[in-house]
Image (cartoon, rainbow, N blue to C red; front, side, top):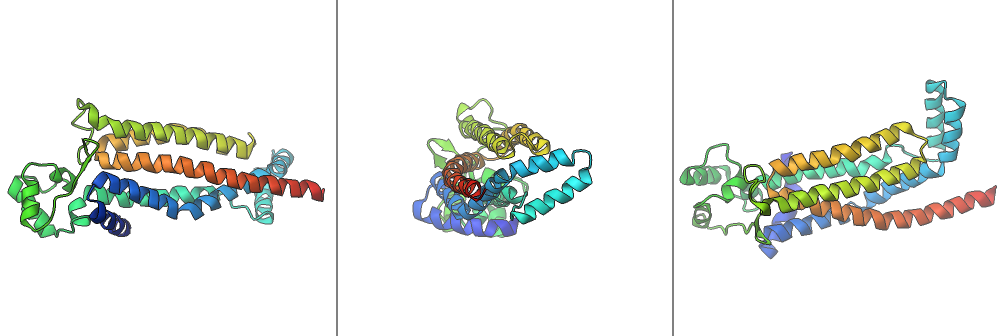
Length: 277
């Protein structure tokens, strides 16, 4: 996880030093990451489009070998190979997103190390000076009284965690009565639900009701993702909720634009197939 955090930390630190606002920095970094992953998203959408093109042939195979699962699997693999379709191609952006998430978690939890580049000894001395425990998270430490003075004494400028009047170092857990801390976690959950519904519709369109396993997976994700988001944003610093919300909204917009482009390509290929017939 530390290896994953280093490139994200470099980018975050670079932008923060220019802007000096942690919330805006997270938004910019999140959007930049989305832009950099556009090629993967395009690849994923093309894989989905190709799968949609061969649905009639898949349905024929499923009907023909409905009583022979092993033979069906072999024939489906042949069909995928023939049309250069990777059934798992649509999962690649999700895998990359998970790696980015793990890296960002480290950056958000350890801002003194990754943003201010303080050493372990310096961080331990700050903890000792303000009476924090050894296990206190750096992000929690940043919100404690007296820490800013300790950071200034080290010749560093304290991180500006205030974003729209919200302290991004805080967590919902333990502060449930403060309505402000709920804003970004709730937005993150709502955005996840929205994204899950869009993905479900796309999966249904791509499979045309033929692949029960895919439909079942889609329905499970529709339930699991919002619950997982709610759990994480409840127990993590609000900075993670901000990242999650912006990342999900950017993904929805990106997906809509790319889907439109790929669908146009899909229509052209369908027309070419009809002409050949």
